[in-house]
Image (cartoon, rainbow, N blue to C red; front, side, top):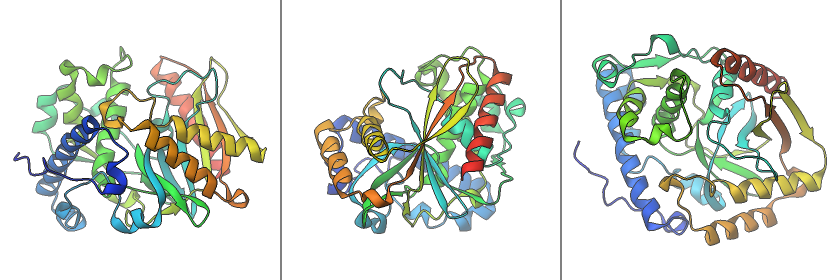
Length: 328
C-alpha cells in the first residue's frame, strides 16, 4: 500500500500534546487503519456506501473539527465507552493507590458482553495465512439499546461545565484493532503481558484485525460529542466475586476523576501514548477547574477477580456486565 499519509499533520491544539516519536508512531498506525478500511470497502459491497465519507478522511484517529471546537482542553484517553439509550458511560482503569496497573484489565471483554456481541472464538483460524485468505466477518450484537462510542480511545474535555467526550473519526475501523487484541488474548492460553507486541506474533494479530469487524449499526454517531453520565473504574482484585460499588462522596468523585485523567494514558508503555506530560497535566487541571460540581458523572468501582482460566474469565466478565447493565 502506498504511504499516502506519511506527512499527516495534527491540528495545533492536539499536536502540542504529543512527543515527535508519538506523532511518527501514530502516522504508521493511521496508515494501517487505512489499509483495514480499504480491505473492508473492497470486500463488502454494502460498506462502500456506509464508509464512503470515511474513505476521504486522512487522519482516522482524531475527532472531527466540530467536536474539537466544542471541547475545551481536549486530550485522548484509553477507555471503552458507550450509550444505553441516552445514558453515557466510560470504562477506565482504577488508579487508586496500591492498585497494580496492568494490561488486559477487562474493559473490552465486559463491553462485548454488555452489547451482546457474538464473537466466534473457536472458529477463528490460528494462522495469519488462513485469516487473510478468508472473507471478512461481521461480529453481530444483540443488545439494540446500546451504542458504542469508543472501543479503546476517545477525546475528552469540558463543554459548558460538563465532562464531555468525542469519538475519533475512524472508530468503526479502529475498533477492529481493539477487537483483534481481545481475540488474540482470549485464544492464546499462554498469553503474557506485552506478547501482542512481539514480532513473532504481530502478523497474526494484524491479520485478525484485518478480518473481523463489529456490526456498523452498533456505533454511536462519530460526528457528535457526548456528556459523560457514568464512569466505571475497573480493577483486578484477588479471588473475590465481581462487585460494583457507587462512590457517594462528591469530593472523592472529583479526586477520582482528576487522578484517572492524570494517569491515563501516561502509564502506558506504547509509543502511541507518548504524551508531553507537562501539557497533559495542564489540560487535566483546566478540565477540573471548568467542571461544574453540580453536574459531575456518577463514579462506580468495579472489582473483578483474577483468573487465568478462560471459562472462569468468561463467567466473571459476564457477571460484571450484568451488574453494570442494571445501573445504566
